[in-house]
Length: 358
Image 1 (cartoon, one colour):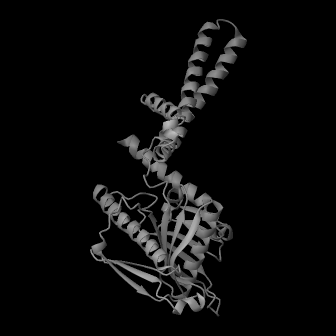
Image 2: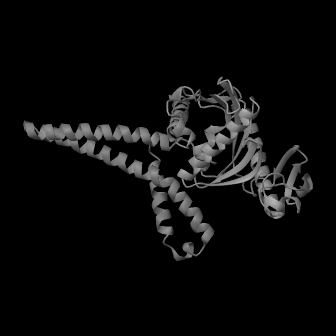
Image 3: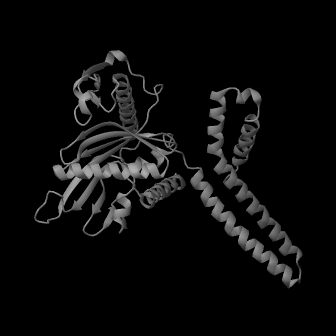
């Protein structure tokens, strides 16, 4: 089953030797590339070594059983060794299967997230702000950095929409299942009668795109400058630092007014545009490859209802995997790991089932 993993182990050892080579350490780009490959191979090699050692000890225990003859104590020792190492080899084999599943090439990237208020008027905007706070606190707890690209605030402190970057290794792998419609059931701050209202907000999670991946022709761009709106003091009305970028072939429009520098706003807007164009291309490829297959975890489509936050009952339910947790306050404070880990596990199980059935 794991015959070719010996070659993977050799490659891992070869990289380890190269990383000590002065000519490699002097080449920053090559050194970084090899370090990244080493980190990818390391968990596979470690688990493969654990598996092969357990198999070797099973063989030794079987040999000991054959040689034990009538020695009862020796047979009991060999039986125990065989049972322990057989269980370890089976466990390691299952874990290896998961490690060998095709990796999402975007998993190690940062992300650009978009949250928009949906049905529910002002309450949906307040819920969008609550979601932004939740993701910001989650990112902070994992050492990710959050930077707002643009935000459209309401007078009551809600968000009609917000675009923000979450940067750090593995950010996309943790947040990619958050795309979709999030539904909230609670008594709005604006509700005098105490009635529970249902509102929604949509979340989109886009992997950050490198410039080399998405080549944008400057001739395809229309760039407008305008004065920023919202908080910002006297500076707001003095300079036209906000940027609106329109991608003419697709009609995509990105605005950024978070920075005082026109150059920085343009740079941020182009990063968002690249991410959207990469996501558009990726979605088209996935639709062509698997138009008739919908994942249990979900398509990542922003129109798909994925989760309900019910405040009167104190519960959060993820509809894709049927998971309900009764600790809404902790979740809204960014404690999302239990949900995210369950989604990752469900996704892996589905991929494993598909791989075994292929």
